[in-house]
Length: 255
Image (tube, rainbow, N blue to C red):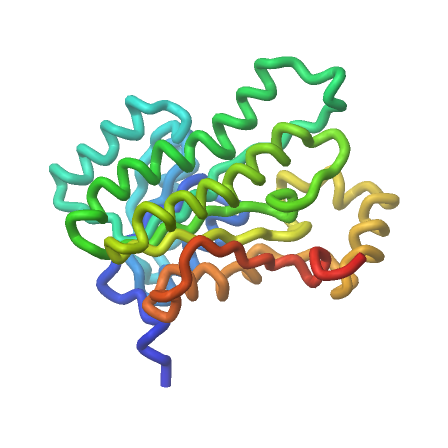
């Protein structure tokens, strides 16, 4: 028998960057727990294809194509949700990109692009979601951080800065919203088998390093984020706030 603490029945979850990869895995997991899902991405055609495939499996899924870094688009989307009677109970800020370059070779445009997509978008979307959650006195915000939320690595400075910012932004959200019945937490994935990491997966030396450095001796699968996501989106985490759960095979726990 399913523990009702983990049920998401009757709730609506918006997952940004969810047409594929980690976002899609999390969206599917939330749907399996009973939530109605709003998928997000910038490619409307691919987004609707993904939504249609999930609907064919029996899940309640809609899509909202908008750029999470565009303030006007974010505001307009939530105004549309209001007009359509869509109340977002759960927000997962997953949208993200990577760009690898040594700091001394890094141009400002790409620094800003990574910061905007990985950090500023979480502020923009969460701000609009929280404006609606606060009067209702309930809501869940789940931000997707990284191992780099607490650790540095060469050639990914803007990503590291953004994911470190996600951790402390999550804490700031908890500081402001906890008394209003809103929980804001984060998940820190380790090295996962995703399209964004494909070049690293195919690199024999890097693949060997990941497996040797990770106590689990393997890369993580996107579906292995589902447990943490459902926990943080459900009533089971009602007294958990401002935390980051690392789902990394133990990498952050060892020297």
